[in-house]
Image 1 (cartoon, rainbow, N blue to C red):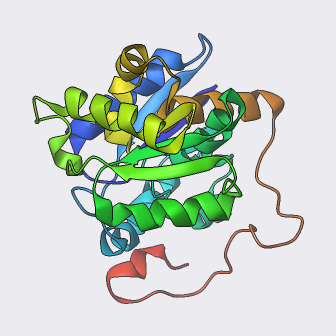
Image 2 (image 1 turned 45 degrees about the vertical axis):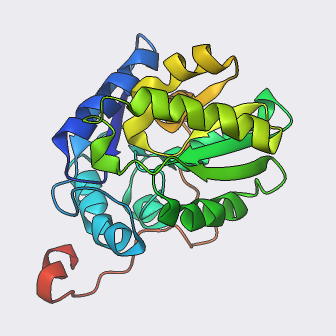
Length: 241
């Protein structure tokens, strides 16, 4: 099977981090195609960034119609419902996947994300996916997304934030709240002595299972059926039919 892992921002360096994390947990029979969004912001750290990232996500899916599953590798899960309408295979967001895999590993989990301004979006997703009981706290380490790779102290800052989150919340598990943190999950887990869930790895595992089962997004209610053809104008004219 082949899974398409989409970085919804336009940073090739982050796509490389995401690609390594995805391939590190892929089954032997699974090919990973890691894609950088063809259009959008360099990083996604606001509602504005997220809104402008969605067209690129949809274009990336349209450009690769043969994948057996699609993973949106941004913790805001931008455009997830829209992606499910246009994809011919299951679509997961990394926040959604991380919550599902973190929940069985303890009494509760804490999220450690990048900037404080993104905490509200994480809270929205926790409620939307039904994990308000399991999520015991959300914490920001205040490292901008594009500095996760360049800051020489990222691992130490994140490790400290994760350890403090466990103590503050009385949680058993950490969820990393950014795809750019994916390569640090095992290192941090070893240091703090608790499970650390990266949504990229979690999403690859879940998508592999769905694809192996031959499952795909249901259109029984009509909500996730392909959108009705209509013209689009201006910058979005290429999305119309």
